[in-house]
Amino acid sequence: VPQDDKQAVAWYLKAAEQGYAAAQSNLGGMYYKGEGVPQDDKQALAWYLKAAEQGDARAQVNLGWMYGEGKGVPQDDKQAVAWTRKSAEQGNAVAQVNLGWMYGYGKGVPQDDKQAVAWYLKAAEQGNAVAQSNLGAVYYKGKGVPQDDKQAVAWYLKAAEQGNAVAQFNLGWMYDKGKGVTQDYAQAYMWVNLAAAQGDEHAIKFRDLAVKSFTPSQIEEGQRLAREWLAAHPQARGE
Image (cartoon, rainbow, N blue to C red; front, top):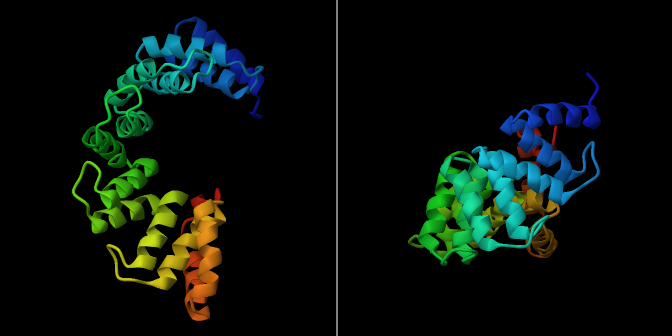
C-alpha cells in the first residue's frame, strides 16, 4: 500500500486504545516526529509512558531520553536514568549505550567509568556502532579499563565498518599516529576521507591538513581504498 502517515496513526490509535504497548510506543514516536499528526512532545510522552509502564523497552528508552532532554516534561536526570535502566536491563542496546553515557558523565548517577564500560560492552556485543566507538575511546583514554591502543583500534574498526563517522575519524587518526597499528598514511587518509564525506567536522579539518602533508601517492591510494570500501558497503551510503 502507499505510505500514509495519517492512516498509520489511525491504526496505531485503535490498537493503542485497546492497550497494545507496541502501538502505544509507535504512536508516541509519531507524535514526537510529527508524522501524520501535529508534532506534540506532551502527547508523545503520554503514549510512551503508557507503553513503558507495560514494560515496552523501546518506549522506556524513549521516555528516558525525553526526561533527560526535558521534552514534554520538566528535565529530570533521575527519571531519565530510571527509565533508561529499565530498558537497558531488558537488553535494549540503545538504552545500554545511553546508560553507559550517563555513568561516564555522572548524569543522574554517581560518575563511574567501570559501569560506563560495562554498559557500553553489553551494547557493543549486540553490534551497536555507537557503543563500539565509545569503547574505542575509553580504551584509548584508559577510562574504566587499562589503556590499550590495540583494543581501541579493534573497537573503532568494528564501528567504522558499520559506517560510524566518529569511529572512522578516530581510526584514521590512529593510523596517522601509528597507535595500536602500524603507521599507514594511506589507511589514515581512507578512514578520515570516509568520515569527512559524512560531514564529520574533525575529519574535514584533518583531511584538509593531510592534503598539504601527505604525498600525492598516499592520498591517491587513500582515495582508492575509500572508493573500494564504499563499493563493498553500499549501506553506508544509504543504498
